[in-house]
Figure 1 (tube, one colour):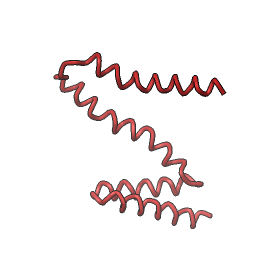
Figure 2 (cartoon, one colour):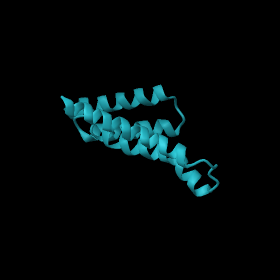
Figure 3 (cartoon, rainbow, N blue to C red):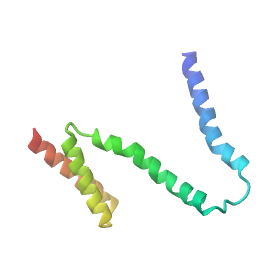
Length: 101
């Protein structure tokens, strides 16, 4: 049981350090356009890298995941609301699952 507390402590220190070190080391405003644009897109790239594998393994068959993803992308590019995109993607994946079985 004591190992669990050690793991939690290490995770807390690492999480805090990741947030605190940049705040303490970088005092000046970042003027480089390259670094600013890089930092602007990091959250989106990280979210995509974490989400895409989960999308493909969310259903029993990869084909229904791909169809749901395609529906979501089409609706998102057409600027539909988040609720509409999520609902239609889930419905599309569900319908494909019904026909595959």
